[in-house]
Amino acid sequence: MKKRFLRIFALIFCVALFMTGCATVSNVKINGKDAYFENLQYSQGQALVVGDYVYFGNGYTSSSDSGFDYNSATSTGYLSRLNLTSNLTFGSDVKEEDKIYTTPNQTEKVSDKKLIGYQNQDMYALGDYIYFSSANTHKTTSMENDYTMVSLFRVKFNGNGLKELVKNTAFKQGSGSTITVQKGSDNNYYYIIVEPADDNTFTIKTLQIGNKIGKINTIAEKVTSYAIADEKSTQRNIIYSVNSNQAQTTSAVKAVDFATGTVTDLDNGVTGSTVSFLGRAGDIVFYSYTYKAVQEVYYKNILNGIGYFNPTYSSVFYNAKTISEIKSAGDGYIFKTEGGALLYKELNSSSSLLMTSEDYTDILFVENDYVYTSNTSSIKRINTVDKEIETILTLEGQTIISGQCGYDGQYIYYYSQKPASEDEDAVTDTNNYMFRTDKFGNYQMVGKSR
Image (tube, rainbow, N blue to C red; front, side, top):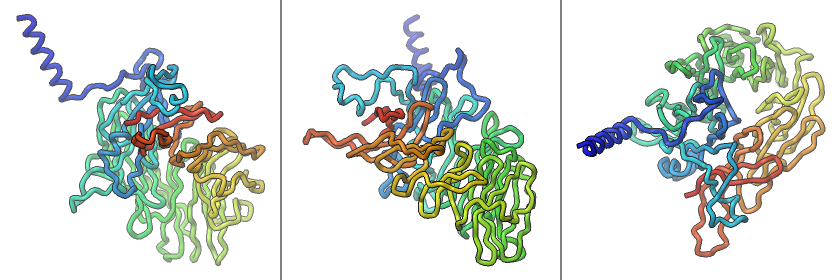
């Protein structure tokens, strides 16, 4: 009778686990307690450090590829993690020279319900959840999939509690679009979603996350350009331009507090002038200003209030029509020119060339005076002080998915294929998996191959 009771209890327990879901891995401990973050954690994109673990998308598939199949992509691009404090071990039959292309025993699958490894993924940790985006799988009204749309999800560190944050709501991606998370003026965190509209403008939406998941709010429409507060900005807002009521060729400037939705009119513009915001670093806002066929890039410090955006000679930043990807670095700022060159400049000094467009394709991240970049075959860094370029990693016969990375403070994470086997009878694995490299070019595959 007792054994029968135990069997029934076990069956009920298993059914309960099936119905509610169960953790695929252990929870993360920090100082003996379950990991919980009051403030947002971010590790430069495709990887995320949580306590002693780094989480990442196991494999990579671009959702814009022709023939993209979500289920097939998810079978390699699921959420995985690796213990950063463990020495990597491999099967006893793995040859020493094959270890760098072999999955370590310490790699764990966390959740295979959603695609994590795809383009422009930024993962965040807040509370006891990982927040991430994934290609939208909801059917359109014509019963088709539109994988250019993005949905937002969260999952606990042990793989439990997977949830779509706004069910059946997806967001457009396109030129100039943005999805990021920032702390608001009320000390809560918000997804900020900038979507391209059909008339070459943008719509800005927000979603509160954390202990409370809010509703999607539209806080600005008909936006022609924008500059979002970053983690160093004292003004927790988005400054943006719209076409003025005076004339379509005149820009008006506004600011919106993304926590409250309060809009402030800043500058109604000068007839015939246009303002286009290019970026923001802390309290410095960069914008191009066009008037009477003259166009230059200016900057404005909004620390002591946001006044008019009338440019002056002393506020000229760079003599060009436009620049992009402006980031703080060292005592100044890095940015891309229209031709793709990477430059460095302090506010009141001349600019200097860091890399030409032949040296790199994408800016990965900045660490103090160093700027890390990538292209399809290498990862490099350059010191903004002495301008010395160091090649961290060069691959032959393998392609790096440039621009998709993460950084745990010691290792840079990137996606690449395993090299083709010399065995003519072996089946070539064309999938891209997560690798990591230290700053000396010692690399290792950490994703799990099929």
